[in-house]
Length: 180
Image (cartoon, rainbow, N blue to C red):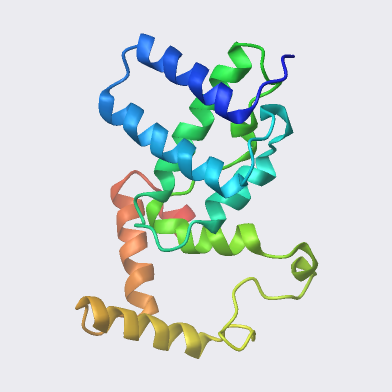
């Protein structure tokens, strides 16, 4: 394997991507993602020293960006790693170790990625209140009501969501026995 820094790998990738005639918008998005990742790393590291954990930490650290922007970083970084793997600059594809975030799941995804391993002890609740206590049925009920009111759904409740989910499941080929 060749020892090559992130900045040199990015230059090589951009030349290859330009030769493949990727759209100018895609190249611009990728350049933006590479720039943010490089700035987050703080120094120009060798590509093979950068781990899946580094990329996960970068993705998790991106606060204050639009919900649809976070998932755009994933394809850029992993296109770079796939190219580097094909060029025999790095071994393996670290993109297989990282699940790409989805815009509507970023809050849960951030929570799960940043959750300290010591908190995964049996009996420790996965989701907690602001006071770090287990979420109760009442907490969930009131949260759904508040969010429903905020987005204009009068009378939002858990049963309504469960019912809607069941209807969509059955309309999309699900069976009644599995729905229960």
